[in-house]
Image 1 (cartoon, rainbow, N blue to C red):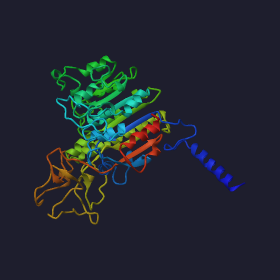
Image 2: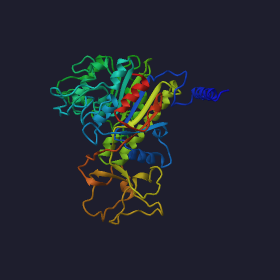
Image 3: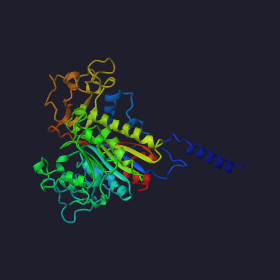
Image 4: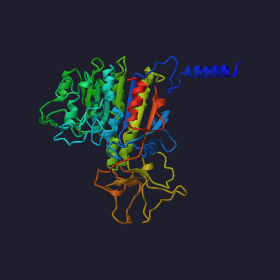
Length: 474
């Protein structure tokens, strides 16, 4: 046999064998559909690589694995916005959802759109100030797919808003809420009959002031959504029992503002992120054409702004639990993920750092702070000390409110102090409480399922939009 023919035969055999490997969730097969029908986009707000690393140590120790760590495909994502080296959540999520790099504070609008601060939650873009940029959720809706938005923040907050709304400023949350109500004033008609599942906090932007809300127009959007056939949930029992399967429409608003940190969550009142995710899938999976679901672990970001590492790490673990819950659920109907693409990433990082030369700590347990403790030298386990001869923590921040002015001599840091729920880690640059800033470094992206092997290398955040579109042929 000629060498060329032999090589061709061997190549075809290898291809055939690869195509028969039903356990490979990363590659296409001869019998599989040419595109995914389902997309789940997980966004850990502010979840930089150091936060991920710290959360891993916190939960399972240095050698353990989070679910995120097991995703077979990965990339690094550049996060800068159209006008800033360090982005905020509005343009970074908008880049993922629209393929457009916009200016800071802007929600799903063209790149030239200038951010104009709203009045009382009502925005005004002004004349000739940009145009709406079509989102993945809108495209999915137009194709007949079911759509869902799940978050631990207000559902009108920057990240969830960028999936379904368009605004010249992220703070126009009354306007953003109105864009969710089919047929109502301000409705985003690109959503067709509306987003099918919306779960999170932020009820105050859906009810009028006389009902304890923030709306000055007197509208009760909760009642308007109910009139459009949405089941409504305001606590965990409501969510589990909501009769949303028949109608295919579900709204859950579990707090007037953001939902609680996972560390503080009342499990009777508020569902976990995992529970919201799986309940959303209960509804969305009924659509035979498929679905697009966005899930945000949004309060990771808020804890980091407070330089409160313990709550940030716990919320990161809760986010990771939601990824596992989704994978377990989807694999029941799509075992090889041949019809489902799952992408996990962050919109930006923060200034959290891991100090050395720390010995391994293992996971955090009662009486054992782990990565939340003070630095102990790997050589002999003794407490490390700075130039002022006092202990310092493994986790620190580039900026934050807890910064000693001048010498740190006399600072009494112990594992008991630094492992407390409310402890704010020390910072290099002093800023007001709650105003620790985002960072500008690249973030991690992991993917699994149909088309996941197209995510690799170092990519722009707005390139993720096209990669998802191609994977699902939207």
